[in-house]
Image 1 (cartoon, rainbow, N blue to C red):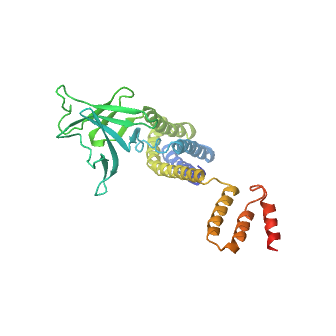
Image 2: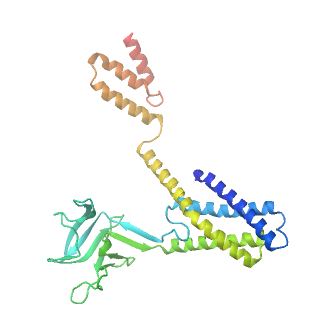
Length: 311
């Protein structure tokens, strides 16, 4: 989040100066004179808007892609599976995701046959996927009483989850589950609406515009900033991904002198394996002396003993 501080500071400056100039011009032209003490009212408006945007960015930083501007958020959550089982004539057939000869990703069985909802042997009557906990979830095809797919012409076949959340998988997006996250949708709508309300309150109560004028100006400022927000949220999400990448790397390579010393000792040992017999003692001494006595008890005494041996 520290990387956003310069951008947020610039946003504060632009909003404060823009509101100050707009108030000075419009109230001087429309009213008898501009509001008094504009020198602190405009910065206060800029600070209020900047604090809201900073809070918005913090939400997007913790949940990248979940919170966005009114025209730039999606409340749909999509989950893709690397494999699934397709049921044909009561038999489960495993299909795995892999590229075809042209590099296109699709699902194939063990014989290299591409998944299809039906063939000469029968129809795919159900899809079974495995969730993150290893639990299998079954999706049954919508069928007519005579065993045919229940679908209109040009429409995909629907596979309905049995029990659970009653989710739907379609044959044109096989291996994928999409569902609406009502909570995220409501939260985004509330944030965007409060953004507009905050502009109105600042212009009406702080800058003393008449409420009708304040509402019209609030709409203008809201639209302008709404089109700028996606760029800011993209930078926020990039910072979140960078932090996640650094955390993953730190987990793979534990920090500390001991881990570096261990790597150095391992490297020295591998190099020592190919050294002449007369030089191997020197290789071992250098590898051991690279570690601190606290990291390798007795390393100091080993180095001293080898020095006496060399002398």
